[in-house]
Image (cartoon, rainbow, N blue to C red; front, top):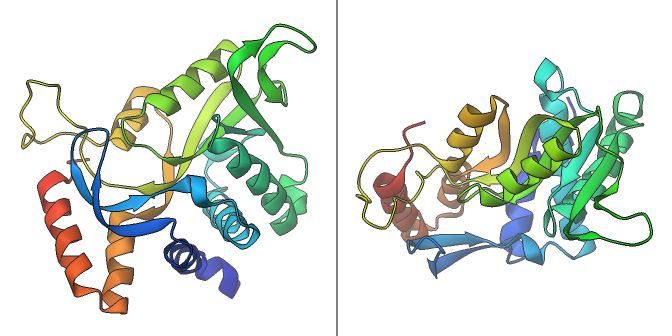
Amino acid sequence: MTGAATNYKTNFLETCIDGGVLTFGTFKLKSGRVSPYFFNAGLLHRADLLQSTSAAYAHTIRGSAGEKALEFDVLFGPAYKGIPLAVATVAELARLDPGRFGRVSYAFDRKEAKDHGERGRVVGCPLQGRRVLVVDDVITAGTAVRQAIDVIEREGGRLVGVVVSVDRMERMPPPPDGDESAPGPSAIGQIRKQYGVPVLSILTLDDIMDELGKLGAEEDMRRLAEYRAKYRADD
């Protein structure tokens, strides 16, 4: 295995921190939780950032390519953040292993179906009868991924897995009248259970904390450890 393959997690993490994609501070999430870190995939627009990202996705996929469940024909990127991830990762997979991935395709969905020209909801490879692997940034509540899966199934494709950049490792927020401290699964755990497919991540919260430990960022480490202890999922 090459150095690039063995170090892709570290390279990706360092690139995200240096590029301001992964930041530390105080961030209020849609769930209402106050997080000490935030991952903004919308900032992965610069060439070097996208190159590091596509390499990390490709190595994550390739490293699990021996699993039958991850034999796939199409990488599907949910609109909008998943679109460049799917396109760049397909190109990187073909570069890394043209014999295995040289003819893999990509596809993505439109937010609204087009009613003229080629029409339809999906751009790129038709999904009918094909094995589809979803690539996205972060699964928080799982809503976007479920919408993508609905599109795939409606188009006649077969979901074989999901790959994301970061696994926050935290349980799903409770309903409005629920107990925030009650144990529960993560969004990733729910997707695995509901659809019976693997959900892989480039990084986990544990990986992020390990890197902060190497950097000596003690205050950020302390806040992340408290957050992890408070919200960690039981899956």
